[in-house]
Image (cartoon, rainbow, N blue to C red; front, side):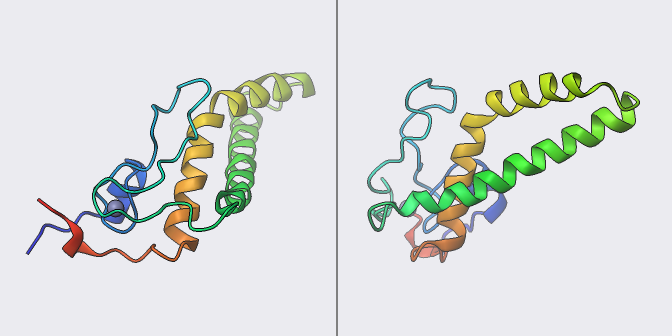
Length: 130
Ligand SMILES: [Zn+2]
């Protein structure tokens, strides 16, 4: 029986939700122009990642929620650790933080979309070839 890979490890390493082996993205996270490029098919199990045209548009909802979370956490950190600084300091910390974190957040939101809302989200450990 093949070894099972955990959901947490495969999600954060950008692996296919069905086999948890094949990589989802074709480029590195900070590749300037291609950080969100998803491969057509999984190299291990062959599942087609974009099941229908515009499938990843739904990832915008996850991306929005992640950015709201980043804003709330950074706002609380500034408020409680730096004693409620002036308004421009909130903006000058949050905006660059969100811009810097855009590539990993876009990728993570696409992965969340695949792991939570795709027809191939159910893990099949029998697809592990090793
Ligand atoms: Zn796969």
